[in-house]
Image (cartoon, rainbow, N blue to C red; front, side, top):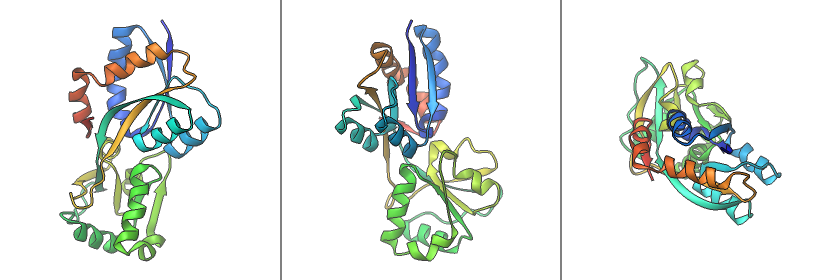
Length: 225
């Protein structure tokens, strides 16, 4: 059976790691998984690196499709942004956009990533008119969860995809961003234009979008797309 090479972002990691052994047992395919930060993934793929399957935010995947790097797109999950604090710390009010704004202004430090959630937050804080006021206390992470910064006591509040906050030890999820400022990101799978094992890659996508995968996806903080 073909080996499949997959390059993917951490937002889908926890669900993927639980589902992958089931796929490998059922299909006989062996999968090599490359965990790459979204920013690096774009530059590596645009630089000519070849894999069979790319799992990334739909927006970035569409950019790769326009460039002819990825051919087919299949939506996998919908993922919301969450807010976390250090385990045992007081939980701020995040019931509205205004409440989140107050919490961010009051916090000694905030952390978010360079991924889709971080890009959205940069724009959100600009629209709120607080970007300049908070820039001295922002930590932006790449390739590792923002929750780790809070767990170590280097910031008070972490923002990231809920699926990326849940597995981080030493923090507690306060909840999702409130509806008036929430941003739902779709993560999708794209077949690489030069895939060596296209049929095997399609079989993996079919498995990840099957009804059997849905309970695991929900358990890990996302919704099937």
